[in-house]
Image 1 (cartoon, rainbow, N blue to C red):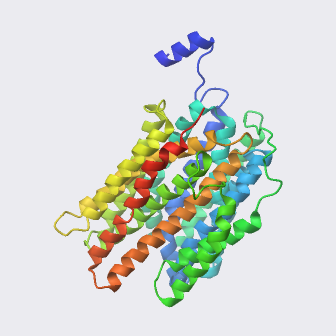
Image 2 (image 1 turned 90 degrees about the vertical axis):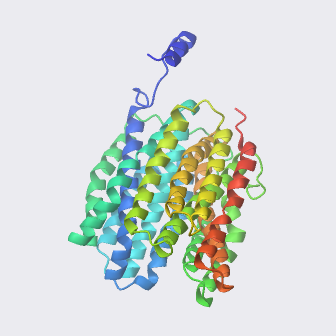
Image 3 (image 1 turned 180 degrees about the vertical axis):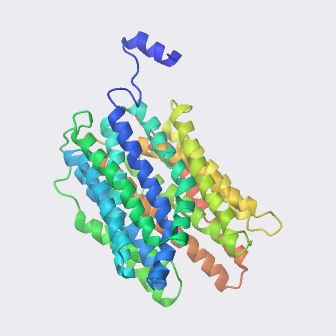
Length: 465
């Protein structure tokens, strides 16, 4: 028995319960299976999509296939959050896992690019429901002292999928068929999904929902659908910068600006203390990391002549490093104030942005830019779970689903918005005659703004408990 456990036993007369104690073992095991399967499916499907789009003669619509997943996850997040607040997280979590199996079968049987897009849309709904309901369940099931640990465990569940998923999917696609990837994932997911449904229906899962007068009587599904449509149009629009694509960006902005704030806590854009600023920080951090992951590999392959294998290794390394940093915050730094870990993570991401910009200089080795992905993953491993813990601590009783939904919504909005702004900087530089590497340097340099904002605003997310 550890010294910490001995001290708690002497103080309370009972040993400290862990993640796999009798009380929490079923929930912990269930969540671990869900996150492992979610990570495996996500990392195996994404590399398969270009092959599927080419086979279905739909390469021109590939941005729609990729973008509709992100957009649909907004809708799924709102649905899952409201459902979790009304009756507990077990319902949307089980429904999301079952829907995941259905979506994989829809994609596997695709006869057109539109059916594949429909499958990805439904998969986005399922992913949004699962992501939000898991975070809500963590708030409903575990005490605050265990939340950093379980979030670290959730990150660790992505390590094996990140190592195995992409290369295995590539081999199956090349040697057999891209459809086999989807069929295989459906087969792997169906039995654990049914087992999870049985566990969640049993008495061993102790999640409860505290009554709250503030809980909404019905979810803003219409608003969520409009925001999802705006996000999809924006995601498609930033894939090109001709008049056609810019029109889609304009329509997306028109839909997002007035309606997105209605899905977020009041004061989010003003960085109001508590939950609003926490939601804002999630959007800034996710948008920054997503843009680094988009631009750095593209720049390395197209401008620095780095092989796709090396770029893929950077992706895998980033996933492993993220999980490692998350473990550190959940175990070694669990007693540190969460807002300080957010600040530390943001400062590490500042270093990552500096490395990414430095990697655009031909005089420096390309590995400089590749290392930016690893350093950025360290920052996210510290900041991301800490922001989730803060959002749950700021949630009123019975509103963990709403808080998780708001975090998911602004995460996706942040990814779309920051990527769009960086893309605009890149294309502007190219239009005025700057070199490609200079354009990438300017686009990546823009990311210093959100990372520094996170470092400055993190104290406003401080938990008062």
